[in-house]
View 1: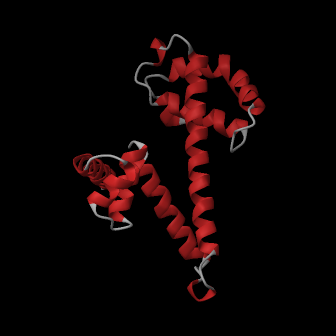
View 2 (view 1 turned 90 degrees about the vertical axis):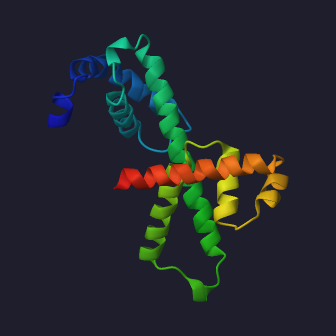
Length: 172
């Protein structure tokens, strides 16, 4: 709590929390599409609010909170879908290629890191990048599948490589 208390937006966040936390938690509790508890999601929303440079400038805090909550839920559902798809693929592997629990955790963490790295890209850019890097497909083949030009595929792959580079630089 010490880092939050010294944050420049702490007084505004404190007021927002006191005025809206109960409402936000109840609103999240009524949503059927959530993936975790309403209290946990509300906490994540307030943590996300800390990242906003000027909280006092927000005119409609409830609208901002619901937007942030929806994005958090969308991201969590996307990660859950990714993990479920990965585990379904693992189930199809022959027993000789069975993956240990430790290896599975490492792979899931790697998939989540890749997913987070590519989250800012458009669907076509993500797809083109993965088809190029994972499937090893030629740009012309990717262009035909995505119904775009080869030069657009080059741009998409470059965006993916840039996202990978940026993610790597954030790690260092």
